[in-house]
Image (cartoon, rainbow, N blue to C red; front, top):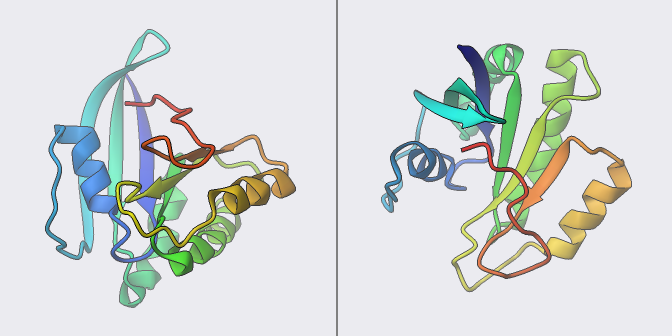
Length: 160
């Protein structure tokens, strides 16, 4: 069975763990408990083939930044998560993207950009700006996800 290593990265408090647990267990976690590192496995069917996803939920806090190179080195695909109510978390995505490309020593690395917390009423990130950012980079490997009909983004990646 093919195994894919997926790494979830983003600033602290953007909802990486809640997103990961929702994808793995279909359960929403609403308490914030900072993660150091958690690993999850789930069997899924991708393009008709049964596969095993090995998902690493990482720490977003700056004090754990020394661990990033190691988990980026082993990852095969990345979810770059920001919170739509935090412009800073969106700005941080560029740093994560560049670090991944540097560590992987590659320009083309599979990445999905996830705008999380779309259910909140106070949005600080202009989703049109996110789309322009993607377009200006000219990368097909980055896909943008938004939710609840807000902004121009729909789920374009059905990994799980």
